[in-house]
Image (cartoon, rainbow, N blue to C red; front, side, top):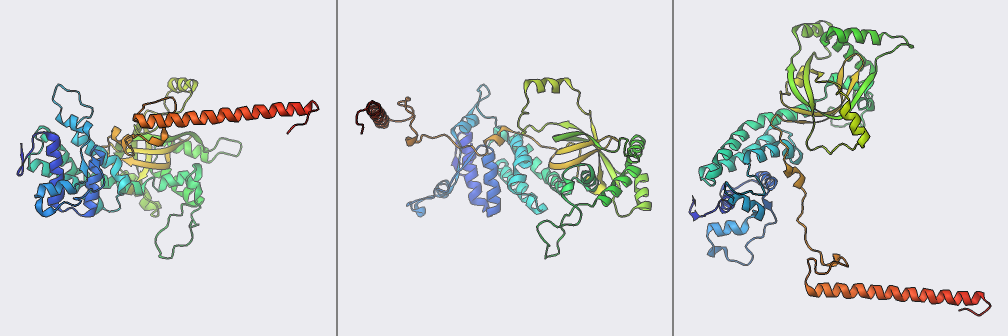
Length: 438
């Protein structure tokens, strides 16, 4: 296999050479280099400090030698074995360009870079796309060409979905859900609709202050009248008009940290839009989000006793699917297949609402075990951490003998101290019998 001028035989050498040449020839900006290194690291390739050329004369080195000396990238032995494996082998790692890229874009990139602007999102996708293009153009890994091609095509389409998630993250939970949270939840009650927490803003920028209880009540009543079905409307009217000694509107179910997968998006009906236009232009008409329960694979296991597990398995779920009201300006950023993490509450009139919105994941969201290796450090021997009773474990003979000598010295010292304490006890006992004790 020929890559440029350099003859390289196996795939791991080809890939490493391609990475080094891509860095040297593409003149990556610091921002793109940061994205590139983090994507490589997420995929299992080591990115360490720049070793440099030391005292070597670069004038005596060719371009490939300089690129190798200045590179910060290394392929670990385990990944090298997986790259060189054949069909009959059982490699430790699966080589999956598309899966790794999807997981990086959906799980890691939003946390590492933030998606403040569309240009920021495009920088991430285009950087990975350019490297995958480079692999295709130079035929670096022909055995993975199909996977690389799919990954490159994915990068060209993923920007819009990633930006939609970023916009939805800023808009959710929406005005209606915040109104329900203000009256019946917990998060919305932290705001009173007037106070600016942290002091007055001098630059005149908008600050979220929440809703007053009167505003929240009006938003909910307009929503039920304009967007709810007849069953919810009748129950809401009954409970909201209840006397003090009768059952009123209240929360009957709370699910904390629940995941939801969007199944269907329903825009506000024509009747709903006309109702808001004629009766209330201050608030926005509501559409519906139909979703089913979904569990985040990254979430920790539930901490339940055996009895609690048995009860949970015997109980039926609260609902097969859920219906949430959201404003059209919010739902335009949502897509079928996206996943939402939130704490939700259920009113006795049949309304589910987002109380505390946590996160939204894209349609192509994919969880890989790479997430668990994000902060992993290879174990190494620490000489001063010798464990008595385990001679020869990771140390040479001189270190073992020195540690044993120190351990024996400590034991002798302790035995001597115990003997002194015993002598003191005998002297005290003699003093108590009328003899002089020192």
